[in-house]
Every structure is written in C-alpha cells, then in structure tokens.
Image (cartoon, rainbow, N blue to C red; front, side, top):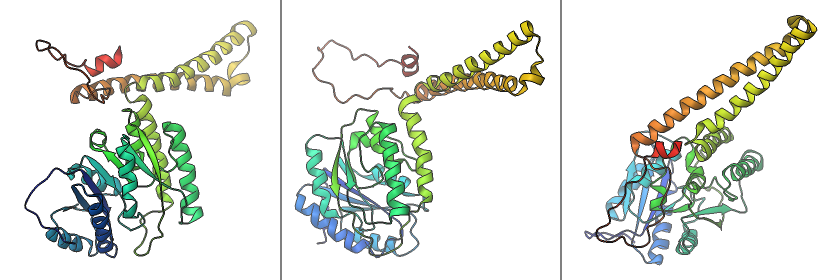
Length: 344
C-alpha cells in the first residue's frame, strides 16, 4: 500500500482534503483514497490540509507523508476555517483536475470515479448532490434546503446542493477564484461568471461514525450573509453604480415627488406643512438625502472598482481558448484596459 518514489511525473488528479481534529478518520480515509485512485490508474496526489488540529491528526498525517511520496501535508498555523483550508490545498496541489472532499468519512472515496467520468465529458466543475441526507432535519436539512433554493435563484446556477465540499474542478477554473469567508460553497456560482460548465452527480451521505461535527445552525446565518456578497460580486462588482444608483434615483424621485406635492399644498392651499403633513414631509426629506447618499456610494464604488481592476490588470472577461493562428508578422494586440472598458 505504501509508495516511495524518487521520480516525478505530471499529476493528473489532486485529491484535496481539509481536516480538523479528525485523527480517528485519517487512517481509514487514506487507505480508501489510495485504493480508489490506484484503480483509476493515472498519476495522482493527495493533499491533506491540517487546519490547526489539536489532537493527533497532524502526527498521523506526517507519518503517512513520510511513507508515501504521493501525499503532501499542508499544516496551517491555526484553525482558519474550511474555506481557507481548501484554498491552501488548491494553492499547493499540482493536478489538472482537483477533487475536494471532507475528511470525516461522510464522503465516500469510492464515489470519486463518478466525478472523474463526468469531468471527462468536458465539464469544468462537477458537484456532489446529497440526494438522501441522514443528518438532523431541523438543524441541518431544513436550513440547507432553504439556503440551496435561495442560492440557485440568486446565482442562476441550477444545483441542488451547494453546501457539499465533494466537488471536482479544472485547475484553470479554480485558479481564477479568490476564496474567503464561507465562499468555498459558492465556487460554482463564482465560476459561472467565467462561463464554467457545471454538472451534478448524486452521492451518498454517510453518517458520521466518529468525532464531532464542526457545523451548526449558526453557520447558516454566515452563509446567507456571504450569499449577499456573492450576488454583488456576480452582478455588480464591475458596475456598482447600477445597483446603488438605481436605489438612489428611486429615493430621489420619491422624495422629490413628496416635496413637490408639499410645496403645491403650501403655495396654493396655504396649508401648514408641519402641522398637517409633518411626518410625510420628513419622509420626503429622508428619501432625498438617502437617494443622494446611495448615488454617492455608487460613484465611490465605481472609482474603487476601476482602481482594483487597473491596479491588478485584472480582466473583466474570461477566455476559454484561442482557436486559429495569426500570421507570422501579426502582433498580438494588448487587451483593453479593464477600467476603461468597463466604463464604455
């Protein structure tokens, strides 16, 4: 089972597994992954990410990596959370196809070939779908169903299960995505901006046999907040004025209409505005001020977006491939400046 090799070969598959206090699961998980990937028959590596475990997880991983050259252990200085652990694994793996999964044995490595077969059909991302979940209905399944429905609607990505870590990605897709917060579950939504093709495969939800779950209902609230961020990133990151400006114009129009009506009542009907229409007058003033502030926020957002894209020379598009060859004397044209392109 153990594998020692001084030779290096291109890696086709990287299996990335974040772990936090999973010492009871590590040996069995390692053996299962090795058995499955050996059967696949293509070069692979396993990247275990120890996310600041306080038990014997790191010791076991270190022993495995010493005996098997296909195993890399990334040890984080403290517990940064699952998104950061996955990002660390993505940054340190070498495979062209990256398969991520949890380390608590609730994801069965025997299902990895399902993901590989789907990726061979040409998809950029393959996501697992826990069709029949075994966890608590009130604290896990119900919040998950609600959150998945909202995510699918807002992101326009038709997935049944955003929350599972069991996914496969092409390297060129995952390398373009910056992760923070709880955004690992939104990778398909973020990748959809770049035109990634996404598929779903059913997976089993194995009951947890050991250890303690690191998830709770409080995480649902954090996920919903991150969903707001994702929606903004997908639709308005390059044009924030379209969002804030619209709200500002609505406020200005509504408040201006109220103030105009009050002016007419005062001039032509000589009514006492504060006595007869005080609350309505204050509402109109608040809407006008709020509208101005929203428009100002949109303009500031436009400046920040331009600064961000220009400073990093970050494109506002994603190219899948270039087909055809230019003539020998043709020069490659520089892509347009992103902020200028965004403003045109």
